[in-house]
Length: 162
Image (cartoon, rainbow, N blue to C red; front, side, top):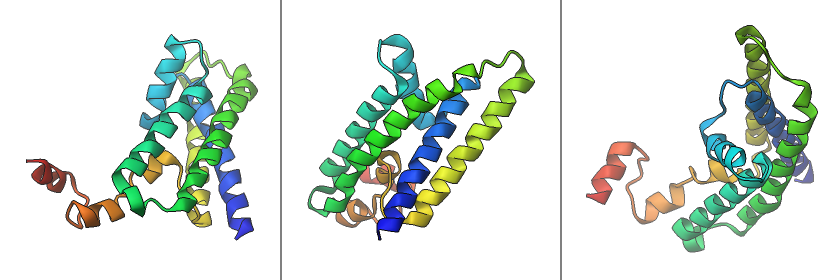
């Protein structure tokens, strides 16, 4: 079991390296990282700090939605998110030399970063112990059994809120 948590932690660091590299490509970032990234451009805090704050709001959302169905093991999302956020800031420094000056040279870190993200997410799935809060909010199975139907489709959600 410990080996699976180590794999998850390594995967989280790999994913954070990819996020930092994609940001350095200057071609945008993933949707879940876009809000913390924009906040980091406006306020005097880092991308990692805002990533941690936003992810803690997502954990809070999971707790509020799932209530007693929120597994205690999922509290490990908090230290893993701290590792994730610190690693993002670390890799923003590591990749500081990446300053692409043409579209082609923007594509290189974008493709490499996307590959790192995909590898990290895949390894997290292989570890099968936790999810980072962004993915954890998508784990609505206990919530759907309580309040929604079994299907997690958008039309079913809108039928529910009518």
